[in-house]
Length: 552
Image (cartoon, rainbow, N blue to C red; front, side, top):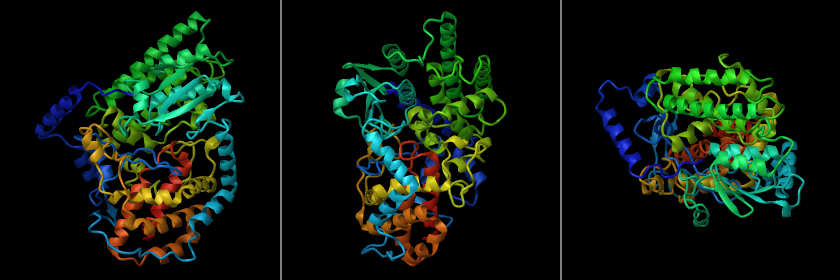
């Protein structure tokens, strides 16, 4: 489950003691020094340097970006790399006055862009799926609020309370089980403490505010494992999640659930402690997991033709272990050849649309992990991988993008890779549906509320969480023009848009351009998977924003 307030004063006192010990160790090589040593010519964005500093909570993330609704945010600090140098902007330093970017006939209006995105084959398909979703049907999707699976709305007995941003691994496994069993249910999304306040009505229902929570026939329950077992027994299906009538398999399931807790503990000791003292423990425990997967026929822990509760208990955390071990420790798990059964198990999961729809990408996870568990502790071996994942390297974050495949650093199987054009059009549909609001959201970088919400929480909240931030509308029209160019490039291709972008955006005064670049970067770093869009679409959106930034 989502952790509660985690020990009152004990946690801040422990962090203070660690800070004192670290600062007194003259030979200690900080992650910041490590970063400087590997990239002497490049100053990282402040949002990324926060991620790598040992004495911060290392949160680089944000509350949900609701593209077509109310925006909430974990704001950036108004600082970024532009033209190879670090620029600190403020509203007073930016150019004042009327918008200076042109809006030539080469860039369509938001209405025209919406029509074009909706009229593409991908747009028509996604809008059709949305219409089904609104009626409780269709495939698994983050935006769904009602799931009927062919039943009537009066048959719904369960309400699932899960987190808005789809960060919580305990919510994910519960959500996945309900989708696999096709249990009719409603969804209510609640903030995690790391990125927002919980509503009073939810705290009246669940006083400790824990997620996930479910309401079954009016009775509320927390703790994901207990919830999953209860749902499995209360809603019997052909694909039962535990082998209740088989004592030997039930004993094996219990043993495997214990091993999962060992793996989780070894991961925490490895990723969140300095150095690599716990590396051998983590690798040996992962080896035992791989061996357990190989002991039964098929890809699943208990055998059979479908994943069980045991698989779901493992998958949400191993999903987060893949990027975190690579990002902070330079350890590749999937595709390394060391764990072939784990590789086959993941591939089997990724053939299931129910799982892919709940799955985050590497960037989302290295930014959602620190607010929940604490900052990862990098070592030298992580240096080649950090910039590839967090975008401080252009590779994978700018055009032309390398092709996606099962052999990519972040593997994408053909079964859920729609191709570049479809991925672009998915991103375009998402941004154009709320284009004006997305533009306003990006202008929050100069709204004056950056960091306040976190300070009010004693520094224990996400470093970039600003759910109450306001927009600075002085830059709104210029940012809107830039984002219309982003959308147009996503729909029609960046090559055909390059000349119009340069003509419209290239001649503005430099302070004004710098301010708009801050806003675009602020938005680019806040695309979350699966909350906002799929991973293939997210990488296209991030890269096309970078393309327009380069032209500016």
